[in-house]
Length: 242
Length: 242
Image (cartoon, rainbow over all chains, first blue to last red):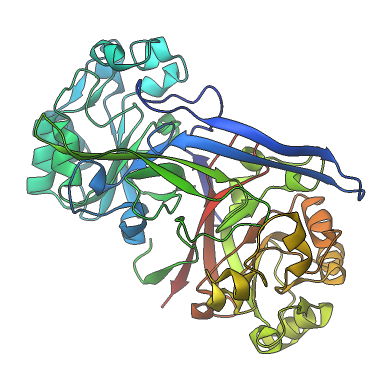
């Protein structure tokens, strides 16, 4: 099945360095035991605490849309399937407030000679993950707490482009290599509301998108199955045929 | 790519009912916010705490084997690929101390007319997940703490069969629908030590294995990427061609 393909891990790992929203609880790993036991075998085990929304994670529709799907209700068919990559890295390189536009979506279509295929998982490549986990460069601030929200600067998807996707294309999911689908300076999170309101799940804090082609690959994005969860740690893998 | 196939979720969800080892910290979900905001949009977000080893989870090699792979070091090629199912449900049905034997492995091979293929993910179907999440039936006890360990009763893989797999076949990973690869009455966890010592990751607390054929399907088993972790919540999906 997976004979002539390469797997790419698009996920950051969880550690003390994992980037979280400035008001969210950060990852904490507690050692239960790590060492040789008196029975003769080695053993290690840990507990951990985290916000749902930190590191590479899923936004389930219910995160911003009342009555919509929770993490455990998102159909697997939306999380596993054919994907495309829209490269806006040149425009976003020196502009941490870059908003992916309708024009960027349409340009991909004209370049590829096809509309965004129905059922696609759409990945937006801004190249912003090159700053991860440097909070000052990646989030725009290394401060934390409510006062840090106004200092956030990172690229996102414009509400107009989110609305265009919902109105004109049928995508299964969308993801990007920044902390949030709405850009750092957003205050109303309209792209979240538009996409999640249509039960389109969102993948945030992706990495390694530079390794992917513009189309013709598969995404497997499997979240921890939290019953009623608004989001969850997400492991995202791309399979690219050679 | 995934046009004519069916996806099966082999994962239990995380909730108050999730089954943990009798000494392990259980899943706890804390509400950060859930409701309408004063800016006009709905918003929900949660924090959670859990042991690495509870519900449907991965045992990374370092869990029982010093210096072997941690969760974030397990190669994706071991977690995604062709799989087989070995059905011991008839023998285990009325025997919560059932040990999957070398004979069970060899019987699969003679039934299928082939050795367990190199690179397989091997799933052991005991049907024990029908008791989940009833701790008394699934673990053998609804007590918790150190004194409950002696009361554990559930099927597992015999150390002889684990050793046979390591010596005679090259498998990528192994999983089963009970709380642990060693059966409930094990005190030395030898199957863990044997398999993890060879960097063969283990999937525990799987479900829905009754829906799978004996061979010819694909497994995608993606753990939360915990840096240095000994285990992690695991989302496991089977893709079966129609």
